[in-house]
Image 1 (cartoon, one colour):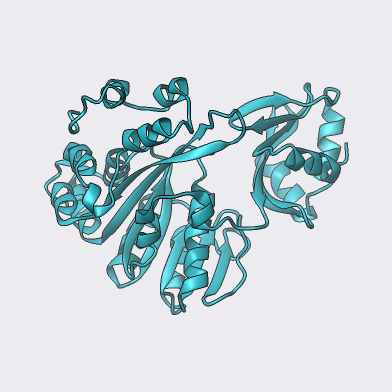
Image 2 (image 1 turned 180 degrees about the horizontal axis):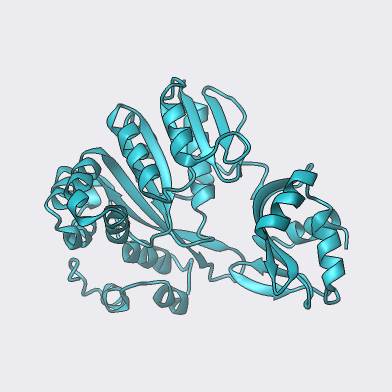
Length: 358
């Protein structure tokens, strides 16, 4: 199997992910669902030979020691791919995530205006959250590209691996990749503070050290953007705070309450046409009320603040789902399936919902 040829076919079919493993034909994820290809099942030698063909000597050596490898790979004129190479029962397998060469602007992503407004912040912390495959990287790339085309700034990124590649426009974009350009997110963050940054993007806030470095950068007058694998604002705040031992959590809430500018949770829901997916968003803007709830550890009260914060650009996930359902963009079945509070959503559909009752 020639990897390049197969990847071209997969991109033509609008696959977001490509699964290659021995014992079955290559599989594609299209519009959120796994779809088999018509190719024959791959043998262990087929799989290893094909996947090793795109590795450098150093990458092969690292994989054979660790049996895990994350890297990026590009097919010229087609797309970039974020690759996870792994070993399963002694055999080699891989998952390729498709990263388009062209960055989709925020306007074409169809995001609420509040997200574009967040790009104008000059300091603080903005978090983009959602499960794996929810389009966090695409949204962040759209936000950075909006900044790149409208502002004269220096943006420093730390990524694992680099996904979207930016071209300098009005801004300077410095992109650093873990392991190739820097040893860790926290080290990249410390170094970034000496690189005259205006904006710092951290691929993911994975541990205490990275979270502390991000909060420090946000406190010292920089805009910091990062991601977490959480599903809503309440879970996001709890995840950040609970990453620390109890005796440190009050201080973390204080830092978070003072630096947070917004939290965007995103999911991708199948379109009612059966072709493609549409992004739905929960948006929390760090108003004085929101900050007060965080500082007082009244985190569950954020649900009500979001539901009632429309004037400030806030919306709950159910509000977003309901809007797209009203516009016939998504089906009733999918609207209910992707909601975390189906009772509330059904009340909205009956016209009986007047505020959050979580």
